[in-house]
Length: 398
Image 1 (spheres, rainbow, N blue to C red):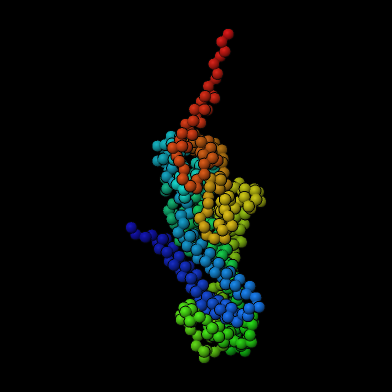
Image 2 (cartoon, rainbow, N blue to C red):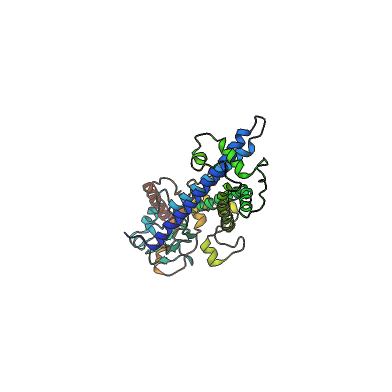
């Protein structure tokens, strides 16, 4: 099967993004982070404090790990395709009860209710009925649940299941760029002055009145012999002039500055979207709405986090790219119940199973195995009970 042009572009963008991210982390670690930290640790006396270098190491490792991990999970996680139960074929074949019971989906998908309103319509290319907040992606050629946007740099759509990873990626990478540029500013300015022929002054913040190149060279000389990231891959000759080593810092500093500006814009926009339970495509369609006026706003920013991280999310779920524990309550937060007033055949067919789907949505979790046979038995018992309650009692004998 031939790969489409859009797919080839996505593959190239993902390769470039991942290569740039890994290269920046490796260069920063090899030329700056490891030498300075190891020298600082080796020169520390027992009575000296290790808080600063150890904190720096932990912060660098955490941000780099979360940035790469969340990016890979954003690329590889399915954003949420509309299941077969929403197709025209399933709607024509299944009766009310079978449709409701078949929507007890696999553990990786929440229970979604078929509802129809002004934002829900049929998708002719996919031949299905779209739930609320579902949009068709022309690049992926499918409908995506809670569609936010298609990101070519991820080669994937951002939707219901990978929006958490997307948020963690942009936030962790933005913070990593800040941490890196705070430490690279002095060496980059030192190297720029050396290139322009200006008087090279000692680098501030190094702790000693020596040039940065000499500082890094002395730091690398004190590294363990098996340090392959710095001493073996890119050794620095002792006769290099001041500023030569800092040449590697200029492109890293420029990349970090661009990352700060661009991801800073995305972080600011998505924190507003997250607090209001809104998506990018909805922001483009409806614009910024007043607080509390958006139909999917749960009322507070903490309640809106449920739609992304899940009600049962723990601290590790916020700090690391773990699989979100999405239950049906989270889907209810994203897909609010509405009334169906349309006389269209498709919408009229949805009326008969709107109520059973609402009962399923509020009673059965979607994460974990679900016994459909037990749910079917419960449904039959409820229908028998409702039929008995609707039957009038026999008249009393005179």
